Image (tube, rainbow, N blue to C red):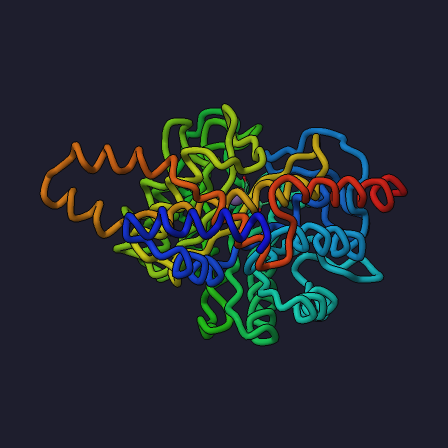
Length: 416
Ligand SMILES: C[C@H](O)[C@H](O)[C@@H](O)C(=O)CO
Ligand SMILES: [Mn+2]
């Protein structure tokens, strides 16, 4: 018996003592995919021919060597990262990660430009999610779906429609619905007199984009709000209230990004606030440091609180867990591995909680026992259960994954 198995057996007993079956927890964890975002691998650059620099009020800071320069390199990096992460994974692609010999305008992108991604996803048994790219483009400089100029607006509406076709293609080919998230950077650096008209135009543009009905078995629309971006500090058209109302009235999914709110707001608390009104919620689990800095996800209180809400309320099929960070100052593969494993650890910890018992105490207004048990829970040996999960999935236990990343850095990344 390996050390991991021995330690696991002891932990299993300790959890059994509080009424938690670790095997049930591990089985459930296996059913919770994490959608890893492609853009951590190349600092949100994408592979469009003649692409310019990153715009839209977001920034990947740092210059760590070895970033992926082609889709082939990015897939190889993802293969490496995914080989170090246990459990079910998906890949979240942006439209700007298309593959084509020639320049393709955003309103003309087609499923064929993503055929290699689909083949790769099939080989690796992954689902794909999607995002139209409403930034890093000459026509996005002033605004996109909210632009006062109808021609520009129409261009971006066409982009949205083209992306839905690609998303549907992903869903059909892979047998799992692709969640397509719309995020636009439109807003204003300084005071705005007419805040109403751009929001009215956004409603109309979004309505036009989603006008064609698509089977939710293949494709789910989502909309993502934001508080502010760099250069658009005073006004964001797609604010939280705007999109929460839009999603509730149009039946789309809502996307909550952990970095898109005031610093003391927690998206964990928002989950139960919106779920009574919407069918699907997409999460962008991220880590804002003072602003929407998109640092790598930690196993911190916020990540844990998000996981607790999903698990305690059994929102397994209605909450889609995506990641959204892009740190260019550290090894990019390590960033994926750290952030994704942390999200999984948080989910496992939540699955190991005796929620029914805690709920009973709460209903009986025994808040002393509730607090006592919640705190005791923190020092139970969840890590032994996590190690068992890694061992069963043939991925490195503990810090050993870092050796693999270092090896890859030496043989592959340093040659770029
Ligand atoms: C690259 C993504 O679309 C982007 O991060 C978006 O989801 C966002 O969060 C913008 O701040
Ligand atoms: Mn996001």
